[in-house]
Length: 229
Length: 292
Image 1 (cartoon, chains in turn purple, yellow):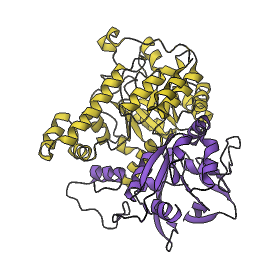
Image 2 (cartoon, chains in turn blue, orange):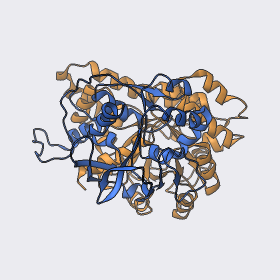
Image 3 (cartoon, chains in turn cyan, brown):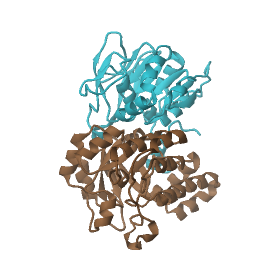
Image 4 (cartoon, chains in turn green, orange):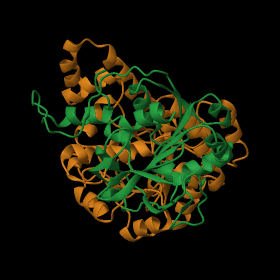
């Protein structure tokens, strides 16, 4: 299977005329050479709801293992946790029902967590426009939900990220995305769109408002899995 | 935004809804009950399918006032239905900024030959299907999500099972066919050749594939997920039951833990009476919704 991202693949299949050459300046897909990680990590995918399947592909493309996490016991065997995009209200309820709402902060004391979109909302200190919605408070920031508007206003745009090396472009896909409101001093800003923070790190936690798992660019997953785990 | 970006963003929202339950609601109170129970989205409707079936007449897009009322009540995505081929209703729903449009056989079709050209819209569409050919035709027209048609408003899972098995068997079949047979297979399926090749290579649909049409219990949700559904729609099954909040929560639980019979059993306890439901063979042929 040569395609890194089934969505990108389906898109190009559907819309490209047979035999048409792909535009050489197309930013849609970044090809990576297969990677041989020095140590294979086991990434837990929080699989209560959301796009965890796309994260699985990103983890596997980076040469690591992915297992689904739905219970507290599932957490015991993983090196790190990825909290996917989806509906934060749904995930919160299921986290409470299964005890993960208490277990994840405990996990975060020794293991790294990566979160996209809804995952970020749940890790934040609070939701500025919904004070009543409980969060885990593992990142010193507040967010506003659906801050760019409804699905009609979802978009893709090229932003800037600084991971292990120098700052570079990154295709950012925003789906009914949240925005950072306040960010504490201990939080490092690693990515921006038009100057506005979109990717942050605080200690063992990496969180973003966009979806690298949708754009098919594996650099953020690789950074998390090999640089932070 | 170019066509590829547009499509990626539409499918993106469908991906976010995976592993969740989308519930039919007819007012703000029901929408809040659905959100509190853990629904990932609600479908704003004038009447649930069971009532559409019982009352007869022409079923149309919901009143925009009703859709706006439901949008104000919840923070999760709000979907709404347009009639098959009724692109003017779809345009209205887009102008109301619903998050997803269901071009649905539950409403009375406006066009018996053609579906909406869904690529023209910025908002994603979900469409019903009974087999792989129908699924791929809808994707070819721009659908960002598929669902089984089942037989809506019956509380009877048998048709959704039939349709999910047909789609999944169709996919499995393509993966073992030699390449030179795919063109004729595309002709037989009446499906776009490039999509047939994509499915043959990847062993799945290029968009999320959900279940709908007859889900009434946590066990129904678990069954559909195990057959290959990536989420479930529940129409009449919740608000036509005795205790909608408990049943809604239970179906959410059963969808997440579909592979854990102990948890599904736990979720199934003490939910009161499910919707009464109908035996499909008692429905006169002219009143079947799935053939639309």
